[in-house]
Structure formats: structure tokens, C-alpha cells
Image 1 (cartoon, rainbow, N blue to C red):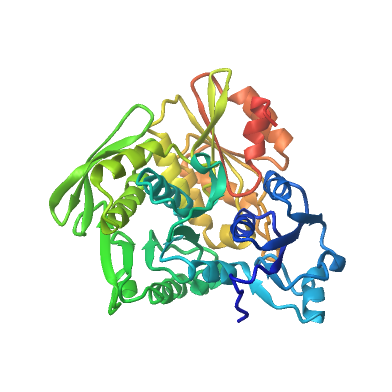
Image 2: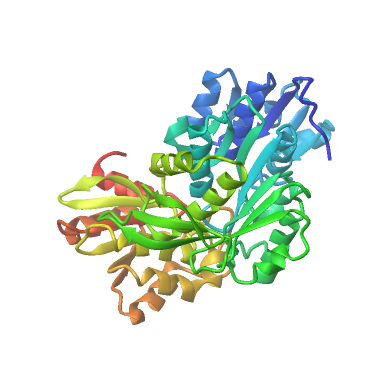
Length: 460
């Protein structure tokens, strides 16, 4: 694999520079004096931010976008060998790196690189820990997969050896990383267009855990089935956490305010370590907080700083995000696109003030919808009323013959009313005539379903 020389300030070209992670990596290289160019299909706030910093960005993918001075090319998993810029790099024999390979090389430049992994909860947990590290004045470099208000975006360039990033398992990308401290939040069946089954996913996480050096740390959720398959025989330090007990860090006496925000006691090896509260709702966030508390304890951050750091965190974009209110209807947006995430979000919503919970769900990818159809139906049935949009294809073609109507047919027998509409206009018209004052409307999914709520509110 090609090695970038961080002391030579090369010219790096990013194919797909507008992605949340790619734009962040470009920002880090800029801070280190590199020359950066890139391309994407359309302009966005992230590309405009980079352009303001002097990055030359091309819209549309063309061979001539690779400038004569380009010394290396970075590309995402969405870029295929038929991409004209990819082909040009091959023809000119320009070294190429995946996004994950570049991120791994960046991690080698930090004394304490922290990687947050898991099928769900990576962005929230990375953000929680970021708030604590900021409160502790560690001046961290942060790369997060969402917009974090505390840092004004998705990237923060610090000036110490502390680095924190998300670590995604899809296409085994996190196996290119070099973490000193790793968190494994959970392991569920997902990305089944790449992984064979849940055992294949667990094997990938095991290989990820094996990347941690002997003087490093693994923090892992003991509530995750077969988690010992990951920890057995590892030379590094291991800390476990659990909502059910029998772990190094546990939570008890969980209580919720009227907006579903929890307060709880934490015990370390059976002894009370402190009382904590969160500004984000749901039991799943108590679990995320336990992981963060365990890492903070390992780093020697005092309890009061951890308490204040957690309270500082009010959420990230598209994670149970309050969008507004219209006609007495509260509109929330959430990124949940896996049954486990949907259950967590709708369970949290039940503690939020509401008459009825309306869930407007846009399934994400055909393979995920097909593989987890029954699980999706069960999770969505926690809402009082479900409205389905068409499946968001993302990187896929519908070779399976699956549709949102198939999901609707699974939900209705479970006793939850469910409608399906082919267009966002139809969905919006239905909601405007059906939702009543006091209802809670949640737009949900990893695609562009957020536009429905924003259009109803008149903010898009």
C-alpha cells in the first residue's frame, strides 16, 4: 500500500470529496500543509467550506480533474473502476488509497488514536466522547460522521496526540485503522450486501480488535451476543459495560424526564462511580454513555469533567433532532435505518410528550430491506401509525424485486396502521390532513426522508 509522506506536503486529489468523512480528511491534510483538490457530483455546504479554504473542487467526474501536480488519489467505496478519474489515475500510474487507508495512515501520526465502532451508535458515541475530551481541554482532533454543533461541523483539528474517529465495518474498512483505544458498541446483522451473515460480521470485528496493541484498550458492550468471541485471548486491556449487570461498568436507577432524557448511577466493578445525566433521550444512549465513561476513566479524566461533558452534548444532526413544530405537531428527524436503531428511537419517543407517534420511514437499500423485512415490521409497529416511502437505493439496483409495499404487508397484520406512498408530495399531503395537535411526527431513514419534515415546516 502506498504511504503518504506527512513531512513532504504532497498534492492529494479526493474523488468524492463532498462526503462527510472525505471532506473531514481533506480538512486534516489542509491543516498539515498539504495541497488538496477534489471532485463530487454536486455542491454542498461541505464542499463550499473546503472551497473557502482554497481547495479546488470540480463538479462532475472527468479525467481532466486530475491536475498535472497530483501525487496521490483518495477515493471512497462508492467509486468504481469505471469512474473516469479512477481510470485516469491508473493510466498515469498515480498512487491510490481508499478513504479508510488514508484515515489509518493519519491515525499513525497521533499518540492516542481512538476508534469508535459498532453497527449502531458510532456518531452519537464519538460525539459524546468528543464533548468530554473538549471539556477536559485535551485539544483533540475529531472526525465524526455527522455535524456536531460543538465543533461547527464534522471535523476539528487539534494540536495534541489525541485523535478520535468513527470506525465503520462496511467493506472491512476499519481493518485499515491503527487504534490505540477501540470501542465496540454492538454487532448486528447489517450490510448483508457485503457480509455473508452475522458470524462473518463478528469475525470482522474480531480482526478489528486484534489491531489494538498490547498497551492499548478495548471497551466492549457485554450485552452484545457472543462478545467473548471478540475478546478471548486479546493481549490488550479489556473493559466491559452493560445495562444488565455483570460487567466492569454498569448503570442502575435509570430515570427519565418528560422529554425522555435519562439520569442514572454508574458502578465500576460494583462500586458507585458517580451520578450522570444526558441531554439526549433513550436507554440506548445510557449504554453509549457507559462506553464513553469507561474510556474516560482509562484516560484518567475526573468524574466531574465527564459529568459536565455528557451534559454538554445535545445531539448531532439527524439523531432524534428536533426540527420544529407546526399546528401543535412536533417534528423530529432521525437517521435510524436498521431495526435495532428503529426500536431504540421509537422506544425513546414513547417518553417524549405525544398523543400519537407517526413514523415516516424510508427503507435504505434493497438488500437490507429484504434480509430484515420481518425485523423492520416488528420494530416499526412500535409507532402508532407508520407511513412508508419508496426504498432509497443508495449504491444498489433492485435485482431482488423488493418494495415498500412488501414491508407494508408485514406491518398491517401486527396491528399498526400503515400507508405507503410513492412520492414525498403524497406523503406530505397525507400527513397535513391526518396529524393532529399533540402528535409526534418522526421522519426516519438514512436517505433524503428528512426533506418531508422540513418541507412541512417550510424550512426547505
